[in-house]
Image (tube, rainbow, N blue to C red):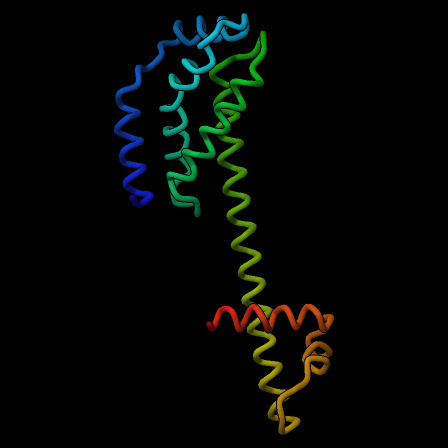
Length: 168
């Protein structure tokens, strides 16, 4: 089954879960703080729609909806676990959900930036090896390429392996 199918099933099941009123939520939050069995699960289920609402606000920023929901659900569970007396429950869980989604976005943008730097470095290596081959009339050695790039030989060797893997 593809990710989109799982997401569709999840969204359908979400429709069947009862929505909590503010009063029900306050009662469950109090019950949770008192250690009542089942309160945590009811709070979690009752706020899964909140995760979906928050996820929609982050669409189009590099992380698929399914991943945003997954991260948001983890943020929801963590927020419920860290909820304490005197806190505004709704505000606390929304902050936890948002933080988890923003962490996922930061991670994704960091990975994208790292990939961009890697591609840029590989392109530079390609230009240097071509230039050296023309100047020397032969293929450049690892040491010569590393010197021109201003990088250690082991790093250039790793880049060459990555470039070969990408080609294969």
